[in-house]
Image (cartoon, helix red, strand yellow):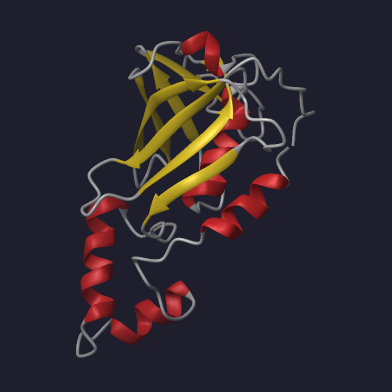
Length: 193
């Protein structure tokens, strides 16, 4: 992980992160320092959504692409993008209700719409980033995007489906699409501070 920078606590951004096209919606509400780098925001999204950080990602803000400039993990020189390590969130969005996209795993195409819901003063004795709430489990990695996830859910619900057992083994056991463990997410976020 890159060197952690100290965040000023002038403002806190409350963001709602929603996995696009998921029905019912899969979403999280988080609060982060306004000047968090996009790279650090990527790490927060990975934790709160439940992803494993095993695929490429990018942010799209006002038509500009931001990505990882690390040659081992970055998007590559054939794509033009701005370094997420050098860009802070409050440089990109500064007005409540502004929206932007975070895309994870270009093969599965997990697009997340992020809305800046509120700009707040920091609360004393509160750690940031923090997750306030959320709904539903993160889909398994490599399940085939939103449409593959729908098929996966149908398969594991139907015990007579020929792939029922194989899918449960693949995902590592029982899978509850309604489960979201707020306390565990916030414990993991403490490791990012």
